[in-house]
Image (cartoon, rainbow, N blue to C red; front, top):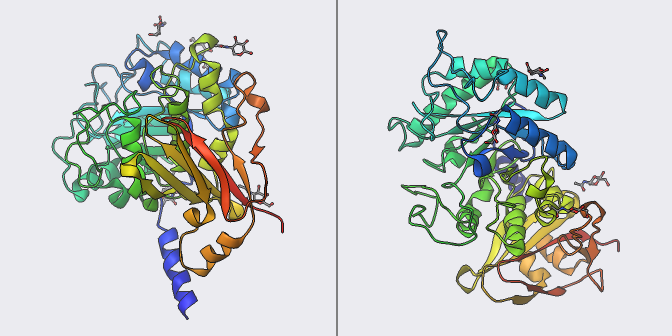
Length: 436
Ligand SMILES: *[C@@H]1O[C@H](CO)[C@@H](O)[C@H](O)[C@H]1NC(C)=O
Ligand SMILES: *[C@@H]1O[C@H](CO)[C@@H](O)[C@H](O)[C@H]1NC(C)=O
Ligand SMILES: *[C@@H]1O[C@H](CO)[C@@H](O)[C@H](O)[C@H]1NC(C)=O
Ligand SMILES: *[C@@H]1O[C@H](CO)[C@@H](O)[C@H](O)[C@H]1NC(C)=O
Ligand SMILES: *[C@@H]1O[C@H](CO)[C@@H](O)[C@H](O)[C@H]1NC(C)=O
């Protein structure tokens, strides 16, 4: 009786509805023009990035979507009410570009805003949803990033935001084309509540800065819940903290989007990049590269490439169970954090994050991870586990030849190995049940 009730409750929580378009069953991966190129884009930038993705083998790791962000538009709608592509930037039209992207086995994305203008003050799609969705479908797009600028004040309640984003969702659905719907409303009005059935992912904060922890008044909220001004210049540390309560709302087809990656954009050191990528992966954020991915290979250092190409960390992000990690220990006023989450086949991921300026040494115990009084956690605490360090084996010269490092003395019971985590760094472990 009791256990069937628990089952019922947990399956109700686990089966929250997602948008019924069959997409993003694991978080989407790809590349977007904005963080590096901003408005300076054209067909050669896109085709060069697509070629580089192939050349680097990034598509084989899952980076499939090549997303054109803002500033692709011409200045005026045409006689049929459509937004044409800027002919200077896209001399062969957008279809020409998506065809080339598809020929490479990749997928193509486009951008607009649920407002009268986009954030870059180009034409927006508010009240033009059907005509715009149709023209993107005809041009062969597979993905829409849909922003929130110039929304005419049609926000401030979940219903107002829902209506604006649902109008585009319905228009996309009506095209009959499978188009991944990536909402970018910065957490306004709680998209994890009103939006998880109408889009595949939602941005949960103001725009990410190219900074690990520099404070900015332009990202004023400490929590995204009830935030009145999402803003921008939100640093990596702040977004991780803001995302902490939201994992419970995500799952296959419906993801918290922590914003695009800043790895390779020059401001984050190696340990900061590892923390950024580890947490984006463990929290099941879409992994959208935002650096200069081009066929000029000097533009993407081997060190940055090895970080975003760590297949073991990507496997955590793409784990079919789709359960975001939960912060289980927030120590020393948040400077030291431990996150865990279940993976398929009875495995777990653990991330130990050090936001401090000094190294942090700590022995992880099974009681840290399996802290519940219930039977399952009791059993897990006394079981034997193999422990893999997902970053220790990274070889920057030959990213393809990384091996998982089994920590010494395995299998582990009770206490796991002591880890020393560098300033701003993260140790990421995978625990798998050991053969008894
Ligand atoms: C495309 O944009 C890049 C980057 O801004 C620029 O270097 C290049 O000259 C442009 N190409 C064309 C054909 O406009
Ligand atoms: C795109 O247009 C160019 C120039 O018109 C043409 O050479 C090329 O074949 C086109 N590519 C595709 C994939 O249609
Ligand atoms: C449109 O929505 C219906 C109902 O949810 C769904 O069955 C269908 O797969 C959707 N089509 C597309 C193209 O997303
Ligand atoms: C990356 O490593 C390769 C192989 O060792 C080397 O040839 C190349 O110069 C390196 N690239 C950069 C940008 O350092
Ligand atoms: C789970 O186990 C099955 C059976 O051994 C295996 O085929 C599958 O790849 C595993 N899944 C993951 C995500 O490791």
